[in-house]
Length: 136
Image (tube, rainbow, N blue to C red; front, side, top):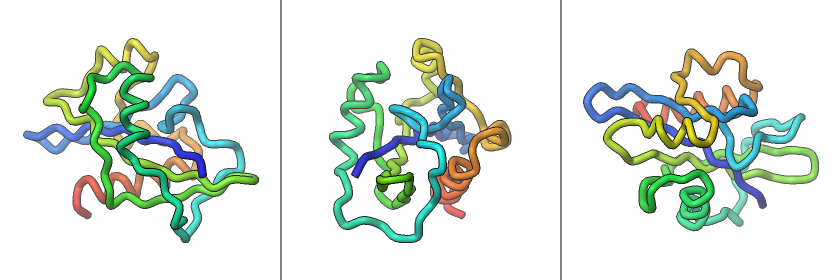
């Protein structure tokens, strides 16, 4: 099973939630989902442990060590031709969104309303993430 990571930052005082969107017009890292990807209702028993994935992503994207925390309750799987993809939701655990890191990796923080042009499967993943993060 392969994986993708969705990153979000939730402001502690206002609960404003922002998602990291990459230059490929995708919220998934380390690369966008393949074409023809779709949500599936099942969850594989062979899930990757998020801590090793997030440690790797911290180094790859330039986040300080220990900045990313996995949302363990976020269990989403996407199916693409020939593969199942585990989706990991990562909280960027900083006081303010790390705009400097986003700029260095040619990414930007967006709110949910700015995600309208993303592929349908990514919009569904964001909806689930938003519901989990805000407790709805």
